[in-house]
Image 1: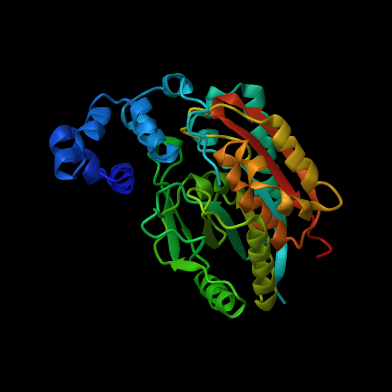
Image 2: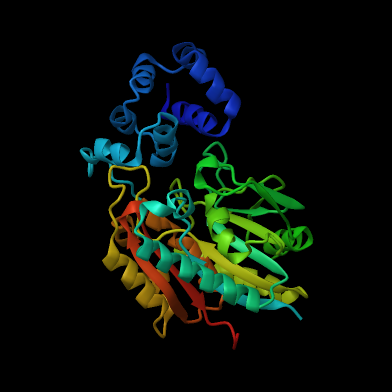
Length: 91
Length: 274
């Protein structure tokens, strides 16, 4: 799946309660229906924010996922910290 | 005759209300006192309209169609979309006639902003609003600037857009307040989250308080990038600076708040002689 499509999926998941409910009911099926590939689905199923970062996801589409996955802010920060400098955002 | 009666800029981190007590009481109290002071000054200026210039954090806008500038033209607005920021649901009247006139005049003045009849308010507007208009009784015009996905509007373009807002305010019969929100240094959601570049923040505030605040328009992308992608939001401060006709700023508060992952500051631009 192109990064655009993955991020559009996460944009909808961030903003649409119906999407969130459908995802929570059947995570794998929901992602298959929306065309996420195996690598993307696994990252989401594992709640692997490092993998999502490496896939190129925008940090402001990842931060809400952290809350969605109930990752405390400290844990979210500590998990990603290891990847500091790997993909620095430039304007 | 109308015009700009107040111009300011302030940080809008969602943690300010969402995780208020994660910060120490002393730090939280100083930030809240500063934001309250800016709100008090705004209301003393008796504005008819409050223009809040913010970025949109993927709540209204996505890269399927990403405008550099988007003007809300609705009759009213509601929010917040983020339930976790600890603000009760509310609605606030829009300044519909002024916002529509703003878009029309922009097109005649060489600017081509998008316009939107449906803008859901998110923390970029909602957090400052708790201090600027806590009774939600000042008609609002939200303006969203792209600070999320490059290419971004240039600093000089943001300054010029602020100057345009100033001309539009003068052409109206309204007392207009403009507040730019966002920044300062931060990297929300990124591996660098929690890093705050205090030196960058103080240099920026110092430049705005200098005799030639417009110098910040010349700051390089590299310099700003190094302070974290959240620092791209100084564009809103520059738009407010343009609305203030490049006037000197008074720094009202600054705290680098690790628990809120943000360098939090606020300024008021001199408008009494403009």
